[in-house]
Amino acid sequence: MRFVLSTIGTSSLTNQIRNEDPREWRLLLRDSANHKMEELQSEAKAAIDTLADRALEKLLQEDPQLNRRISAELNGIYGIYNGRLPQNSPDQHCLICTDTAQGQKTGELIRDFLADRGFSVSIYTPEGLSTKDTAAFTAGTKALIRWLEENIPWRRDSSYRVIFNLVGGFKSLQGYMNTFGAFYADEVIYIFEAETADLITIPRLPIQIDTTVIRKYRTEFMLMAAGKLYPRRELEGIPETLLEFLEEGDDETDTGLSAWGTLIWNRAKVDLLGKELLSFPRLAYARSFQSDFKREKDLKARLKLQETLAMVAYTLEKDGGHTSGLTGGALNYEKIRGAEGKAGIHTFRVTEAIRVSCTVAEGGGLTLQHYGGHDHVYKNP
Image (cartoon, rainbow, N blue to C red):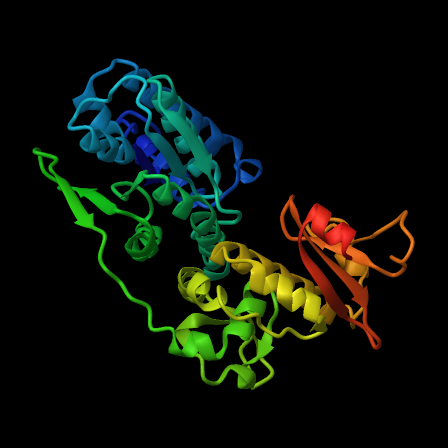
């Protein structure tokens, strides 16, 4: 089975502009390229709707060559299937759209076309992703990296062949996706811009990450991944390409992970965090907790635990050691009730099935007591 990820541009709209259309339509599409639906002027919305209707009308003619000319994204997808789309394929398709009105309209058009032919199709829109400014683009690409990490590795482990279809989409995003593909995809595809429309396939390359710096600063990487910002002077040994500087200035500049830093960290963290229990600010470990960690042999489970500890530590640090920020949400921090000898014992969630018991430490923070399944933690808090 294949998992095909396609970047979505706006060729399906722009290719439908006719000579007799109002001359300003091209300008309207250009000037509204980064607008969300609620930001569109009525003239731009009318033009986009008209062009989308034209594209759909042509796609429904079921002419593969015509469809490939209408949409760059479909051109790549047809190429994957040697020019003919199969019916009711088990393959999964995901369309990566910009957070814009045109991106959503085009994505929905292609999604509906593929779904009608029996494909399993979804749309993912990284929040804020557009080319209106550097901040929006950077935030969108970081959201995309998080999504890739959550959705690609388990599919590859489940024998899906992951294909990045980069025939369509914005050139600025394609540059990033080429690099992301080197880490996540089995192959990246393009199409020759010629009548033959031959497929260009770039296979997965054997990339190794030098983890020397990441290993030295793995606690800082973990906390930055959880949202913490550091003064630049505390991260002097980390290459600037892995860091994002939120303000220009002196050593007090707030510094977090860049998109590249997030990507490299995601790819290296299992190997770095599967063996040793890291120390985090505001957290202390009872011997019983350390023993529970050593008994856990699943490296990914250990990683998930340490990512949760980083989130807890960062939240405590923000709140001066108080636990109020831990209640509710994913952590579900709560007091154990209804049993003698458990006064002052709380738990927080690692996954739906796994919890950690803890007590509030003097001066703020937590001492972690046990880690494991519900029965283990609640019977031995």
